[in-house]
Length: 141
Image (cartoon, rainbow, N blue to C red; front, side, top):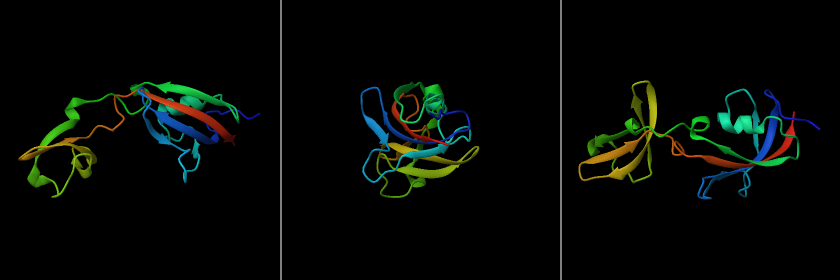
């Protein structure tokens, strides 16, 4: 039986949940396909990839990934308040905007809309959260 190694091409079904049980992503949603990736190519978050190592075809398991091995810890310095005049009209809380940051292009989410300003957050929506994945390895090449 084939085992997942550091350069395996894998096909995986997964369901990602938060600690409170909220599902944030799944390959099992109708119309979705299993995830296909080559380990070691930077396609997957570190904890997801390391959780797949040594699994066999057909094996199922649940892994927990700390923020440091997922999308990082929440950084309050990545939240800013900007004048409403700098964002498109009709923006809503939860909308994503693209802009230019000190290191180049940046995507921010609108988290609050005030009278004259908008609060934007450049943290990944899953930063600072422990992620729980139910994994099933479909195939290993």
